[in-house]
Image (cartoon, rainbow, N blue to C red; front, side):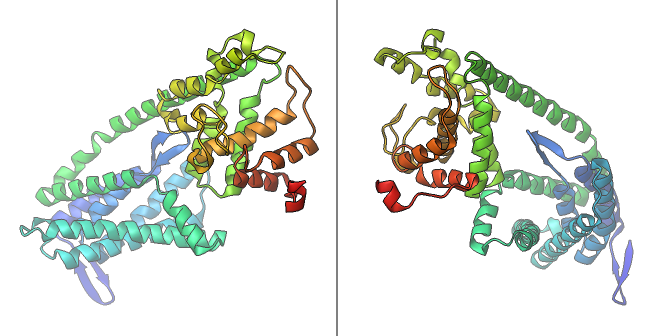
Length: 406
């Protein structure tokens, strides 16, 4: 394959051209058919063939090869999702080209003899090329998001890094790209075999995520059943989850962390399935023994949800959502920021819903009462920052120092 660029001819050998020809459809498939990872999470896998192209072809040949391929992939992906945006097609295509161009250039400089080098420089070159592609792609995304959102650079960078939970998957894809490049170096026609197991792996991942989704729905249904035991609290967990999400967004938490906390809030009282009706539904004041029994529900809920991957990360929030800022809560008497952040946020949402909802022993109280009571216990029972965030969500004015003292 030959390309004339800036008046000079750039050539790829026949083997390089064959490898690129087989990698191109893998790239298109990886972008058009993202792999399902979890609830509402899918991952494109075109990083592997992109990195393989960067290792197999010289920089400009790699870039010129990638541009039409990624354009086609973006077009097909947009059509498949019913939301074709030409600006996104242009950005993603340019991002891929720049990433491949930079990665291939670094590899060529560090290992001009290619992957066949015997002195160890090839491994270092591959590592440098992978880091280059990763950094270039992330910097481009970061720059665009920063320009649109307009947050302070420091906060934006911190949020971006915290939200980079898919990094292990990226590293695995770079490893797969290296394997494809090595196979192409040995015999470029063997690259075609890489596409054989992909449909089976894709279906297996779909089945895995479907099973986890069914488990998720079953646990949520169980939590709703617990709510349904008491007609006065029906819908409580769902309401608390909705309030929790608003607080998380007001606090500026990353989307992944917010989803984790909200999911825990959705089932935070599921442990009440282990509480006797005579105690859970008692309209009168609980005895010390009965109160000790009802205090078991966070631990029961945590043990139950810990068994399921979708809920495992939120287990600590479920276990500690009745802890108090001053250490007087249960089950462990944690204090202040020793209490997991998610549990502190859920506690604020739970408190508001408990105050304003009708219970078996009283009618729901007013918004004014809720505002005054939550301000009173902030810094004692509730995390003051999470409580302030809830006040901001409600457009409530935070009481002055003199009012708090009074």
